[in-house]
Length: 161
Image (cartoon, rainbow, N blue to C red):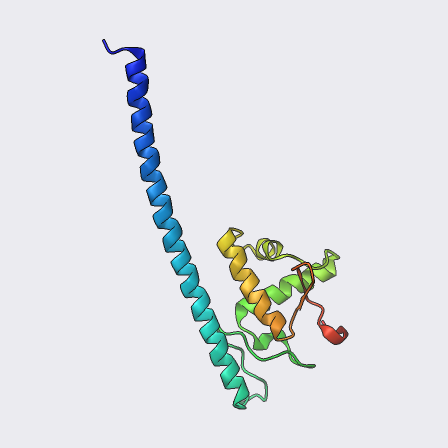
């Protein structure tokens, strides 16, 4: 009959081997996740640059006299008076809508995790970073205000919202 200490040592060895395999799998998954995130961000940046280039060359509006909605993955034009969020890609419209709803609810500026939760999107680190990248892009175009503490608000400079 094996000794209790011998049994414990066998179990410990087995547990350590499983732990090492799990660590290796977690490292591979983290690497794959980081690569996928970089690819998504690169595609979004490329699409935003293309949309910016199209806007800079004076592309004509659609036949209704309105600026056409941006394709998913692109941002859209800079904000100006009279321009509606419908010219933006759907995700950007949703972010603006969430922030406008927060203003109406009196909850004020939101951080990116709160925006993601409000929209029912992923609140993991990767999901929050995606929201942060999108919110930053529309803030750079004047659709949102980035507060000094990193939160975002739907109120635009000049009092428009």
